[in-house]
Image (cartoon, rainbow, N blue to C red; front, side, top):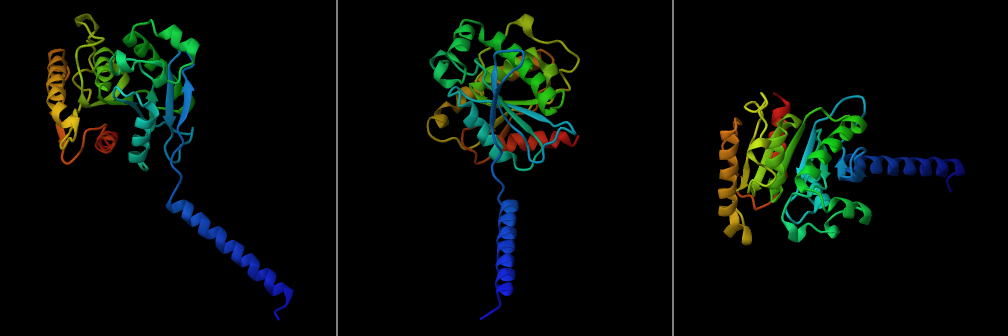
Length: 270
């Protein structure tokens, strides 16, 4: 029989070893980043946000605004970017915009707005609401989460209505813009709304498209291509200098968070 002291020592060593194993497991497989939901301080727009690994208020952080397709799955679309972000330093933001699609999905169940807020915003112009709301959200991200002054912007499919309108109306807000397989029908845009700022030609614009669409998207990709071509023509006609469309080999139809974030990260190093 061993003395009681030896049992206590071995038990303590076992507990310590288990603790070290748990700590090692945590380092190898960290928990997914939490997604929080908030409302802009100076506007009714609600938004979802995911902070990067190691976030602190002691420095500023690059911000990526992500716009979904007409399904309006704001948090679900954001989660795809969280998964693709890895250790990149981006604050990811998904504002609940109204302009990312047509009337069939512009319904209360796709949003987290209260009934009173929904009643108050449902009668306003979608693009006016989004324009003011995005400005308020970006101001909050700068003030409360140390976001950088200019943000990156991306959106896919019907989210293109929001993305192109923001690009043409508010280029000064954006560090770079990455439309992905987008719709574009000049919604929210008329000739007087195009910006004429000096930053137009220097603003990086990279359109992405999936290289291997499946299902209905395989049949519809030509419509995305046609509408994207019109958006690019309008961009060039008003002084922007978009890059050639980048087709992602083997990629199915979707927001392409991996290639988009990789391109944004490359721009951080310039």
